[in-house]
Image (cartoon, rainbow, N blue to C red; front, side, top):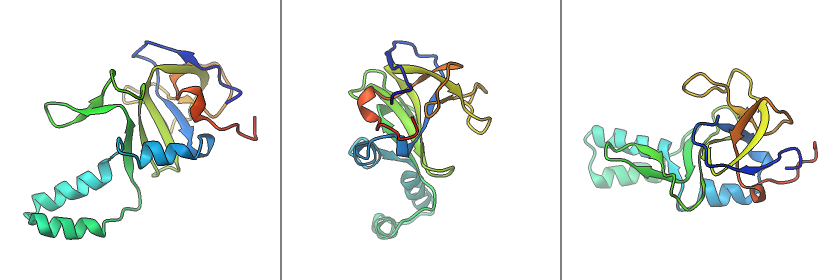
Length: 161
């Protein structure tokens, strides 16, 4: 995007970058949200709930065939399962970024880590990190914070800029 000056970074303590899906190329959804590396936490949680109810494998498979959710949370990019069975960022992964997509508050992608960063404005108070710091709004011009962002080829030229 023309308003972002994208830089390479090795830092692991920057703020998360938040961007609307319409600012990214259409291939983002296909590659990152529905590709083989995508981790659908909503689907996995529903599957675990059925297991906890004592459903058989066959019953779970039948119910998951028709599974649908109003809102979803998907991990994209470089994530790995740790020993405790929780997902964590894989800093040595092939993509060079790790993020979260949720359609709960609109079609928003959050970059939790990346090998790229950009200076941008802070987000509204609706989007804060777990430590209370504001995220970086990758959709607006600014210089308030340095936030993780996608590599340059993921963005579309937005008509507003």
